[in-house]
Image (cartoon, rainbow, N blue to C red; front, side, top):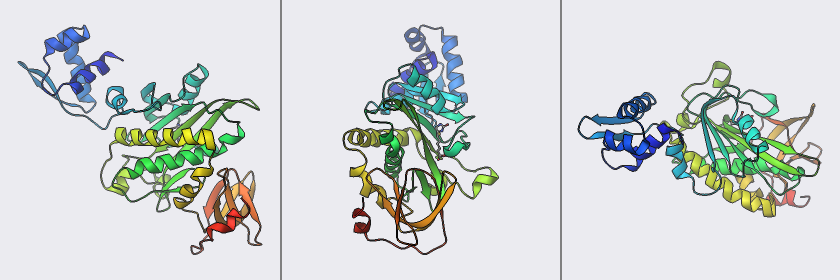
Length: 335
Ligand code: BTN
């Protein structure tokens, strides 16, 4: 913990004013140094009352993911240890490096802003301040092939976290886009450190447009944020802790039982079900109606000639057609 974090932790723990003398004694620095850090915190958006006789009192905290604010909200092992950066190129890159150095499962990297955020299919990921940009280190005891359904699973945890707020429901767009009325709210980039037979680590990077009020022109049409949906800002520390709790619960079941127990729940939140789509995968394009996902989290597409095909990855786009819902048992026959 840095000196600033220790100071903040003291102020957070106190219900009233804390004197400058007490803070300087507890932190082992001069009262002048305490004052400088108080000023720096004020610059970051903390409202701190100051009184010459009584000291300092924390009145309001910003929507910040600073460790002393966030760490107390971590209940399980996802989120420990917690690495926070005001600015970083990509939390996935930092998390991969930490994983290579032996970081334990649950280690979390969070950034206020990413300058080189990465999305799926080699795309850039717009990551200004106000979003949730984070990466989790995982060490699942499964084969590399079995990790295919992990991003699909994590998208469920993200929608659960969002559901903890009074918001209209967000949906998932296979494999792991979080969408609202067709616009993208978030996405997941899972990267593997593995050999042919063994997974050394997985880095699950999650990006959510939370308190973002505007997007650059090319994204304005395709992206939205939770703040825009809700009409007000959301607490990112609370949202992050809700996502982590759901992710940890789902993940421990997934390690034992795979994706099958989550299949129906995922399909309920899938905005593609019964829709006519095109899927672009490895240079070829397939067209058909989405019947759902299978027990491995693969997308099941029914071609116009009635044949079923399964996809492990790809880019799905809607074709203009009315919603058509397939009977749930149609797919089970082949699953
Ligand atoms: C997608 O293309 O939908 C996936 C986007 C994933 C973005 C997140 S933000 C945190 C983590 N760091 C990155 O560079 N990417 C992921």
